[in-house]
Length: 297
Ligand code: 13P
Ligand code: SF4
Image (cartoon, rainbow, N blue to C red; front, side, top):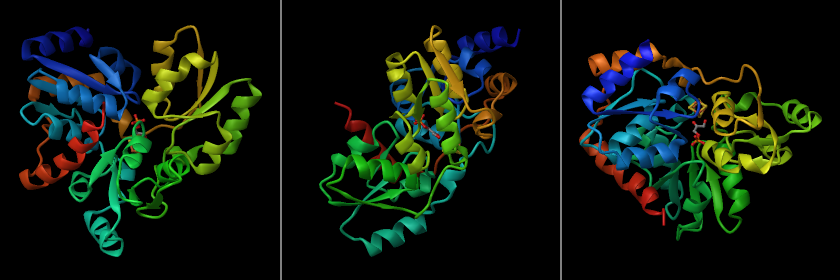
């Protein structure tokens, strides 16, 4: 069985497999740890294994490398990107900073490493509110997800939150409609949505949470409609087998779904594709990422 080959090689090499909540079920099942962006970043930082096989997308594997540079971080597929991350360039961050010299720049980890190098601090959807509240600056340039910026602005009304760019969004979460929320309520479900969903979906839902937040709060109801990438419903079902989690069929992140068990095995056999980051960019991005991590208690 391919799972046995993966386990054998993993042990021989002193490797651990980290997987995001959106990965395919087989990859979640073989992983040593499954979690949201923040949980994975913390696991990567604390990892003592020589090799981290990171089943997710580029920005997550890069964050892992930044937080634990002496480990070999491997993304089993090439070009597993994130269209949301790609909609913000470092030039756009520099221009916005020039227009708002008194503002702090907060970048969602779903951004390129070059853009993070321009940020004061990063955040994930799990800690965005905490990060923005922690800042001394009254004005915050927040990118690249305008829906998460909307969510943060509502939770932290004392700050002026300016989305950067205007209208930055995840094309996967953009697919949910109010009809999905209504269908969930008609079934008698509680509806949880990710803060990357449009504001109208956020307002109609019963709970707004990061994927890790969904796992922590799933005990609150028996039946849920889960408005985030369908891998999360599988993850929740594994954690709470006595509860029901409905996903909206067909709302899939193609980049997250690219990694297969064959890719994981090949990554262990060949060491491909190792994450490398330019030293100067890494040093600047590290300051912003470490500042976020330092906020944890
Ligand atoms: P989480 O940090 O909530 O896992 O979200 C990551 C992501 O890419 C959402 O689309
Ligand atoms: Fe990027 Fe959206 Fe995929 Fe998350 S779901 S990795 S934000 S494209």
